[in-house]
Length: 112
Image (cartoon, helix red, strand yellow):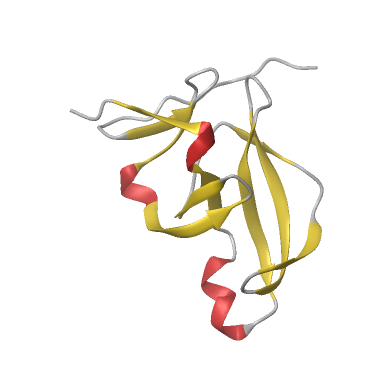
């Protein structure tokens, strides 16, 4: 395996992996807190960093059929959520390319 390059985000209100504190995204990229993941509360973000993606899978979610990829922390490989690759319902197309991060697997850094 090659060298892992970790990106550190600038600014305040950083969301990080709860297990190893690697930065994943920040408050500026937050779209919605009104989502539910496998573990409960989840957040929709426009983008993130320092994650690996799994194999694309078609999944029947509460809002219809989507093609998604699991997201894991680049450093410790902890499951964090998923990425939407494709939404089959027109009303769900806004999710494409966005990521869901589950609150249970996140910690907050620099929330003064």
